[in-house]
Image (cartoon, rainbow, N blue to C red):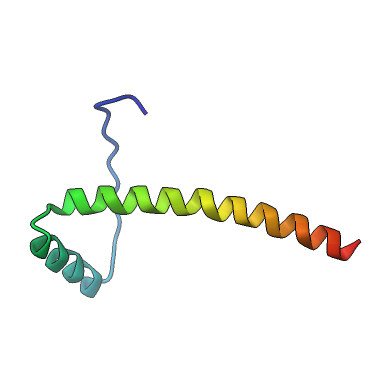
Length: 66
């Protein structure tokens, strides 16, 4: 993604989750946008790790099933 580019993401969440996000943002003195950015980075990292794990598990299962 080019530097300075912004992508808009809209999601619908449970009202309780939204309130939790607001409380954490206030405690951390961070904006909702900052927390959303950190969450996005975390989920992207987890997705890469999950894909790597899935490939390893599939490979192991293939060996077991042979």
